[in-house]
Image: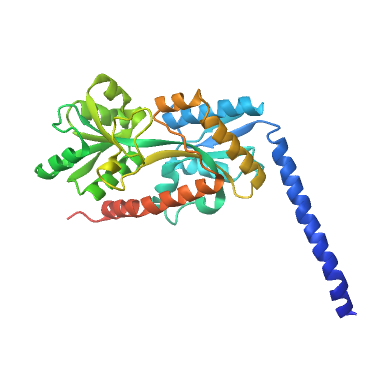
Length: 336
């Protein structure tokens, strides 16, 4: 009898399972076709009014128009991005509350807070798509006698005790870019902390610090006023609206660095919804009226699929985690 049951009922169970899987797939597809049918919220670690926040709001506004549903940006800054991550990790997995994260949350926080994090970023979220990148630029005081990155490296290496560089925040993307540039170029430069981009910029304009790494939006006042001069940008290639500004990796291979803004969802969100949002984001960031507004904010879109976005984040972690660990070890080392 047991043998008979095995032979008869297991095939029926297999048919039932297949039907159930098919029904789930159909249901998920229907959800995606109907998505969104109510307002959507983006939780972000960006402070209101800063460049990543403005970029996110541009995308949210265009998606609101496309979807005929309001997209609300909810700012949850603090704790290196962990406050926003905690808020986004605990929501319903239905695609109506999403996580608009920044580079440092994934490139710095897992190392600085290793073993202490209340949210496992690698398992709590899945990528949706790239909103934009903000490449970090290298600039110097206008009176520094160099015109390109190679000349700056040579000057730093023949300057007694080297030269200082400023950046927005210790451990932020601008600081990491300076450390990457120092490591790859072997330039004799060292970081000096300042409380924000405006302070660093004023120090460079005033000649107190010779070098600065910062996003193009942060450098804009100094560039417009002529107090600083740009030497290069850490993008993969020259930027479309700044073709005369060299990419730093033309001089120092491997110096590619940007603050990026990626939209993510809580793990378990239906893939059909994730794929739909990805397709819509890619349409928005390529809109003729969005591209120049992005450029004014030092932001550049990348057309990435869901899978490519995940691969990009993993590659960023692989690049930056060793650098952050080295910085952390140096900071923790006892003074001699």
